[in-house]
Image 1 (cartoon, protein in one colour):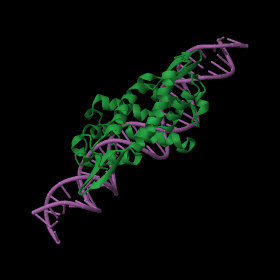
Image 2 (cartoon, protein in one colour):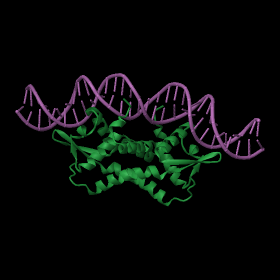
Image 3 (cartoon, chains in turn yellow, red, green, blue):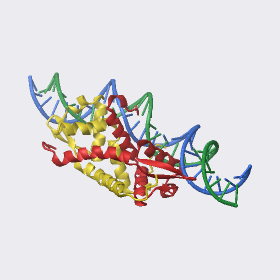
Length: 110
Length: 110
DNA sequence: TATTTATATTGCAATATTACGATATACTGA
DNA sequence: TCAGTATATCGTAATATTGCAATATAAATA
């Protein structure tokens, strides 16, 4: 049905899913990587960095912002975007949990 | 268009996106968490753990498997699923990159 | 004020995802 | 062999996502 049964899962599970889904697009990976590469907030040139039209990029930025993975502030005419720790901290918690388990797991049969 | 312009992005970006997208659903988060919780491979009871019908769960397991996040092996009648390091290692690399950046970043203006 | 520049929003078409009933497959044990 | 159990696949409906042209908004500057 294309509709996720959100209400059947915990708040934690839904939040993690939203974060991972936001990362789950190559354009949004590219945006994150670019923000790291230039080591600063980026005002305006993200559109030029991506092989997508301006409205599409704007939409991807909006999704990253909604998920808490980037934040933006007005810088006169333009808008400055940079990574937001808030979202990444939540994902880090989950993945550290997984990684710790993988390092120590017993009873592996596969 | 609902179609991702995969060819315009790097192989690395596409692969990371596929992994993150696979994690990006609460049912699949729940599957991963359950595999960690029981600390062993799980033969059969995953369907009972989730509030979804058997074909739906089967589909989610398939997606996790395709992404390299779980692996399964036949155990007689049933199938054993457990976490697969391969996929998680790739995501870890990306997120460590992000986390290292966040800890050390300069020039923050937002 | 009018123009330019930067970004967001709207509307829509194409495609993808989610969910599940029905059914198929495949192994086990009687 | 046959029934029972476990899982996968098919088909399909509902909804979500992706992408972009057109357009709107808003600040900067001439």
